[in-house]
Structure formats: C-alpha cells, structure tokens
Image (cartoon, rainbow, N blue to C red):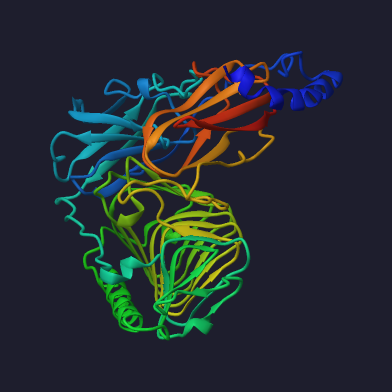
Length: 478
C-alpha cells in the first residue's frame, strides 16, 4: 500500500500541514479552505494557417495550438471543422495529448486558389471542462501548388557527435552531455573547463565525468584525427546543404519573431536574425522535416521552450545559422544546430539535439544530447543521470499553476507515475504502462483523474519502475 511506502514522508510533512492549518488556510487534509474549481476558459494561442493567410499549400494540415492541455475527447470532427463556402471538407481530426495542439488533416488535397474557413466550436473544452469562450474562426486561401517533399539534411559522420567544434568546447561545472563530443583541427587543450579528461589506454579518446560518451580531439591517436577531419568536412557540407536549399516555403515569416507561433513542416528563410521568446511550437508527425535558413543570429530567450507536437522529432529539425546561436538561461531547444560561427548555451539551458559549430561551443551548466531511442522524442532537462532510475524535483515547487515533472528510465520496462494526497489517497495517474529507456518530462495541471482542479495542499508523486520506486513531495498553492 502507498500509505506504508510514503508513511515516513507524510509524517515528516505533517508539521508543514499543521503550520498551514494554524494560519487558517487549510483543513486537516492539507487542503485549502474554500478553494474554487478551475473556471478559467482556454484560448487558442496560435494557428496554422494564420487568419487571412494566403498562398497556403494545398497539401498542408490545419493546426491549432491552445494555451493549456485540452480534453482530447472534445476535439473531434464535430468541433474542429474546415469548410469551403458551405461545403464541409472531409478530414481526420487528432489531438496531441503530450502537447496542446489539434490537427485537421484533409482526406485529399485542398482546391487551388480557394478560400477556406476553419472553426473550433465551444464544444472544445480543457481537462476541467471549461469551454472556449466562443467559436474560434479563421480563414485562409490556398496556393496553386502543393509543398514539395523536404528531405532531411544528411549529417553523415558529423551525426556521430552531439557537439562538434573546430576551435574549442568550453564549459562551467554542472554541464551534462549525453553523447560523443569532438574538436578538430583544435587539439585537446581547446576543451576547457572542469571536463577532467582521462585518456583511454588506446589513446584514441578520453572520458569525462561531464560526458556520457567519449571525448575526441585532433591530437589523439589515429584513427581519431582522420575521423574528426571527415566529420568536420561533413558538418560543413551539411551546413551548405541546409543553407542552399532552394524555393523556401516561407520567407521572412513574422519578420523573424517566432514567439508564440505554431510552425508546420517546411523550408523557412530569413535575411535577418530569428528570435524566440516564451516559446514556439513545431507541429507535425515523426517523418516531417523543418529547415530554418537564418542569415544572421538565432536567439532563444531565457525560459523559452521549443515545443514539439504531433510526433515531431528533434533529428528532423535543422537550424542553419550564419551568425551566433544563443540559447538563453533555462531555455529548452530541439533540433540540430548547424552554425557557421559560435553556439552559446547559457546557464541551465537544454538542447535536445546536436550543436555543430564551425568555431566554438560554449556551455554554462547546460545539458545537451539526444535522449531516448533513435526517433523517439523525449525532453532533456538539466541535472539528469541516464544510467539509473531517477525522479527529479518538480518545478516550480511550490506551484500555483502547471507543474513540470521529469524522470529517467534506465531501460525499457513497466512504469507508473501517480500523485497522492497527504492521506495517501491516489488522486491522479500521470503515466502507466510499458515505456522505453530515456528521459521524460510532462506537465501536470494539478487536476485529479477526472480533470477536477485539486485544492491547495501537500502532495506526493511516486515513480514505480520494475519493482523499484521513488517518491517526492510537492506543494500546490491556489
């Protein structure tokens, strides 16, 4: 029984609950007195196409992203419709339960040079049952052609590294790298910071407590210098391939400010820099490709999140950047960065992908790697060790809104993640079933299993994996 499992923790937390009771804010169950249910209505934060968009390719999906997790059961062909005049368009409606994005995939190509109307009705609700305030309607007109199939950039041997740089790799303490790293033509002396490199007996690579993988440099024993030279040439060729792809689907979109937008697969081109503040959603399936051609800098602002929806994969996202790439503090970015100059990953930032720079890569207590099995997208967050079961502290804690919960599975197995109140009663199941090894992040809105908003109080979330379990405490505020 869970009551035995978390009993010591409940006792340890009793003082907190009693203090809250003394302040008059909670009852004997650690729950807030008089807390109202969640009555905040959801909103549509972005769409593709945007309202009044023109020249939309006739083979594209129609996409809507919400500001919170929605009830998948309410997003159907009855509540998400597309029409041409009064004629309904036949299609399939899906909702990405990991993200917050709904998709309408037409059964056939849209007509050319035609005007369409997309509608989300008030039958769409969030997980607490709150509907949209009103029907959300937008229109767009189509182009005369379909978008060409976009092939991914072939990294060749550059894809063997999560970090590859020509002039150096530097870091501060606290960085975690999952995968191999290399420098060439620079020597090992260009790998600076607390890497504490330990040379293997073969002389072909070194290891580091900061790297789950191997470290390679151009002055190590053959075949390392030859292999690194080939990888650098492959990196440069991949950059050129991405930069010279012709006929972009979108040019100078949003004048380079992608903050709060939803982007469908395609080739994007800017003659300026690109900025992401708050976040951007890349919505597509596991075979879709995004290539971003950026003539100046790429800046992902502090705390910004590049979110993937619908099964999109980091391995199919390519950021070709002529200027410096800066990933701001605590930001989360997905994809392969091909940079002609430098890549700077600031304090607490995470990159689920690869950093391939034709000068240097600079890290500050950052996390970089492709986690999980090939082709399966999981979040990467700072502070993880991938060789063992790990349940990380929720963030924020205490929380008055959505809570981010992260965990790591060392291998494939049976997992459950459940939330309990201070009396040991299970109130919500967040994950259940078989899962592959890797790192996972999810957002819990503070609801119970029926979608009802839980009152303020002390809660415990427990990760159980193949007979082992870990438990942590979180506090909800209202």
